[in-house]
Image 1 (cartoon, rainbow, N blue to C red):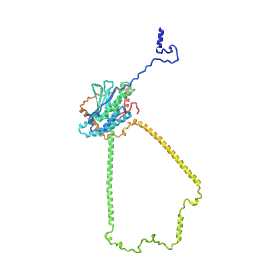
Image 2 (spheres, helix red, strand yellow; image 1 turned 180 degrees about the vertical axis):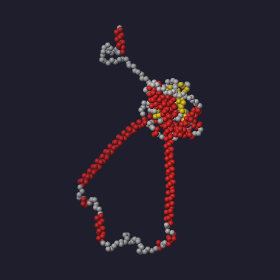
Image 3 (cartoon, rainbow, N blue to C red; image 1 turned 90 degrees about the vertical axis):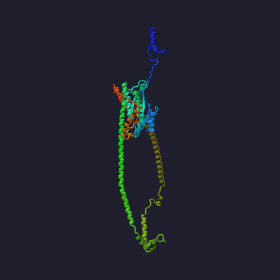
Length: 506
């Protein structure tokens, strides 16, 4: 009994119909009947929180849209449409980049318009009509308590600096899983800032989840902190760049204006130098005319002249022609020698040039067969030359068609690559929006004062926020993650809206 039980235990994993005996060696392949366990694929982790635009200054019909009466509504609608298009799930990535860049370009033109509008407004109440606020709500996906991350605050400060507005955070005791980032200031700028922060927050979290090199919570937070600090540094550099471009544009404008004034002054001096010469010439012509008038005979002299009708013609003084002979009188010498005429004819015969071909002399020397052969050769040569030209034309036409096909194919390839490089526009290749550094600085100061006045009018009181804790990098992996975040921050260009994937090469 004991031996049978041991044998049953040995054959537990094999089929009863099989001839396999574990005690006997066999070269045949053994197939077990037990099913293999399949490991379940783990789902990709999702970010713990998500940012969403919940309020736009352009969307509040009661208060905010009324505050934009003096702003170009058509441009604002284009900005809103471009921003919505960039966030649409059906929009391709390169199209989203182009839409965001268009929105930024329109915003730059709006800033200049806003500056002109604010300068024309004298009262504070009129200026406050240009203000508004937009809100981005960050909510926890697991419905847990939400805390303000240091990197998120740094990113919001960078966005506020870029768009010349201010930002504060707001939380509610009944909604502990939400934090609101409120951007306030010039209404159109708050709209762009809200969309930009939504994009930045969600993008940083996606990059954090995709960064497999960062191990542990400290390394992942260090990566996010690196991206946010990189954006903040970019914002400061961008402000300096705008001021530099504005100063250069102002200098060029003043130089061009000075050059134009000098050319105008030079033309005026040349005109003044030419005018006296013209007067002198006119005076000389007047003197000549007066001299000519003085040279005419006087009336007394004209009266003393005889009347032409009373004068009789003298035969010796008659120089007219005889009407009876069309050729006139011949007064040749009667004693002229005839030999003189003959000598003249011989001289003319000697001067005459003989023709190249004398038909009478060479008419019997022409070889018609030879001429026919030459004619046939010339005709055949022309036909061969024409065939060669036609063949060459066909070859050239074929080459042009092949070349055109290659060019079309190259254009298609270039068009595909165009969307990848369209956002790599250098700062010097585009005209600065501001033509005066003083106007830019004044606009920024006015925007900040406008934001403060707007907050006071709403009766909102802010508490002083705590200082951000110092970054603590625990280990080499955290330090590497932080520096990787700094590098990845260069792939987010808030001003030109250049966005790249974290693993995409430049």
